[in-house]
Amino acid sequence: MKVIVAGYPKTGTKSMNVALSELGYNVYDFLDHFWYHGDKWAKILSPSGGSIEDFKEMYQTVDVVADSPPNLFWEEILQAFPDAKVILTARDEDDWYKSYCKHNEVLKENLMYKIMQILSPTGWKYFNYFRDTAMCRWGLRMRHPFHLSDIDNVIVLKRSFRQHTKYCQQNCPPDKFLVYDVRQGWAPLCEFLGKEIPDKPFPRENVAGNIIDKLMATHPALIRMQREMKVTVALITFALIFGSYKLYKNGFVELLNNFWSSVQIK
Figure (cartoon, rainbow, N blue to C red):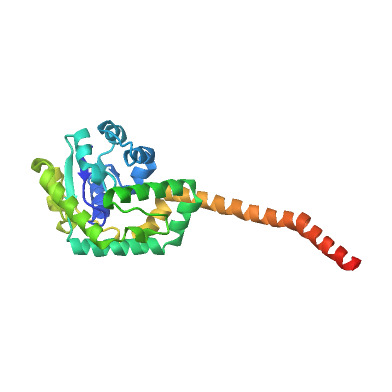
């Protein structure tokens, strides 16, 4: 473990992840934490909790962790990997909240994203991971995938963002810590990490929350959910057709015969 990105989602973390990948680091993001270590995170986010050893086991071969839930546990991960550096991606609070809301609206409007969390075993596991992460981050609990509005409390969101930012600034060892705005480009990031500045523009990812469609097409976790959903839909369709046929074959025909028999008797 070389870098812990402690910033909240929508502070430029997706752009940061691409930039760190360009610098040669192996980066784990939100979906990667679920895909590769979902069971471990389920344990850590449960009442039983986890340990420093869990973080060592999960991330001993990973260079960078970013986004939630690791950003909420940057201190514990730093204890597990004391040579790592911490980068807090910074953003104006009001700008961050507007961007977060826009991203949430994109998710709300994506019907496939919500349905596959219900009709896929992996999707339901992902929803629990998403819900538990939101509970840990905001203290707000989602009831089901169609209730993203459960985590839209503006006062709670801004307070959580503000508290997390201040806590990182006050408690991270100064020699290991960088407060970084992705609009600053390569120079301060590369200087902090001891890397040469790439001869290319700094990446700009997930503008207006548009990354979800890309992830739906490329990330193995979401691809599996979509496949499982299709299997579930096919099984439900078959069951409905077969049930309708059996009803027609047995119950419905018999019901009609009984009806016509009663009419003839009268």
